[in-house]
Length: 108
Image (cartoon, rainbow, N blue to C red; front, side, top):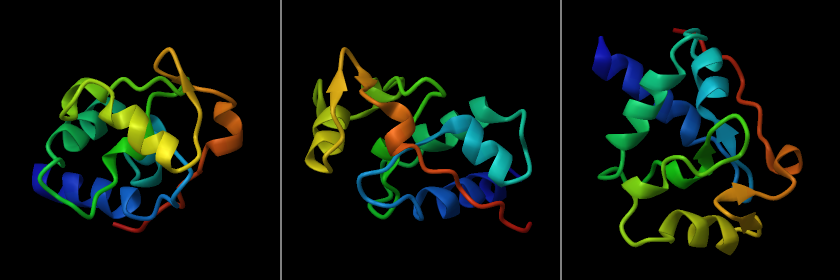
């Protein structure tokens, strides 16, 4: 079950366009598990060996880089986002709503 859940999370994360971000909760809602934002976080923590999962594009509901400590290097998550044109100040995305991407609901 956990592996299937994680794979559905990764399916959504792979769709996040460059220069955009989404939240753990939005992903949870899109896969039909609206109250499972924390599990989405666990899936993201486990994704760092997967090169095709842009985990840096997943932040909390306020645009805070809560997962940054799971990246190699102190500011790697911020650097990856800034390389895509997203401004980050004090670990928070500036103008978060502008960059927010709403994932489509996927079928199980």
